[in-house]
Length: 256
Image (cartoon, rainbow, N blue to C red):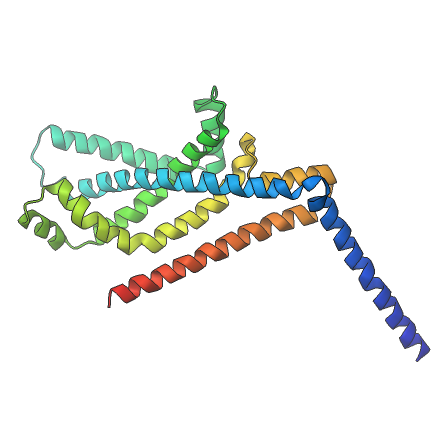
């Protein structure tokens, strides 16, 4: 009985010790010198780069998707001439762009953009937005192209019967329907892009991951900062995944 009480006393004494250790680590990593601000500023920078890169990626993706889908749908029926040659050249350029971007790691693309293409630039955020935007555009292009190719050819004929030319038909009839079909996939691409921006620290940008790394380098404690960074990314992904689920439900209900 006495032995059992002694063991219980040791456990009770151990719990406050562990709690105190966690408390001390928390204070050291986040409270002292307001180190939590590294994470706050890093989070804001991550979201800024992500949103701007998404906008650029969608613009590039739509242009590339239109070029590829137009080539696949109309190249055989086009009459020989400047328009057909131009479309072939644009399709080749687009295919090279998609192949190179999707075939190389995003961190390598970021470093090439920063250290080679824009070596003289001091705007790190702009370089990161361009690098991630061009990377995202390649994947967005394939997503939107699949949406365009899924639209029945009767929609093109309906547009022509209304007096629309090919471009007007794409803008007013095809693209809106394609966007509706691929919107959940585009939202998932946004979630993936948020996580991909974690390599921004390779070019000296104080993003969320780099903020946690700076805290680790100053406190020599890796557990708390890295756990906090992972937790923040997880919360962001869960939040946007929930929004995607709600969006998918509403799209399904609108089709009934």
